[in-house]
Length: 180
Image (cartoon, rainbow, N blue to C red; front, top):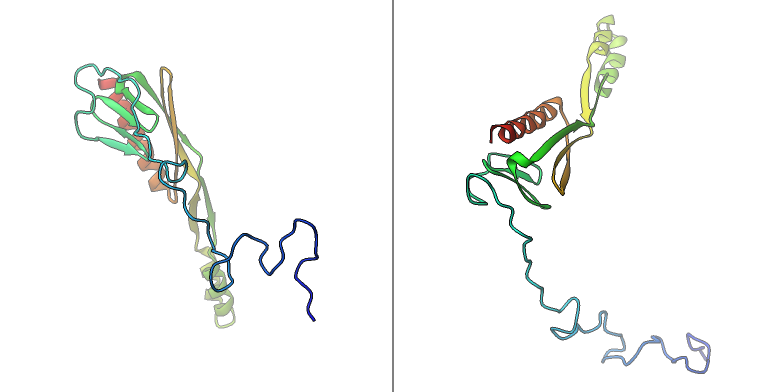
């Protein structure tokens, strides 16, 4: 005679699964049935997004013109800066560029292995220890701020060329801000 999986206690259901009614086959349903539409999350209909108040852009209508430069999720047109935090006139913002990357120079592992292997054959194998590898890791931070407006983006970098490219893009955005 086998014991039930759970001891007999008042109010405790008996059987292999202590949940509610079981479908045919003896196993409970893996997930509960979804709520009817409109009964709350996740079946409730989404509310449409409504934009905040429009910011007047001197010299043109808001949203006109192509994107001239972009940095992550920041985009600049001739007249305005567009971010997830909102839109602002390009002449009303200040740009900040912070380089938080680190560049190191080291001997790569393959050069050490080849130097050890060729050391026994000829002393020229030690020349492989002169090989250097430059490695850049980290990110750059771009901040655009204005009156009651702030947006930051951190962009990962893997080379000094990327750092220089992002710095040049911020410089171009600054020139757009002063030229307007």
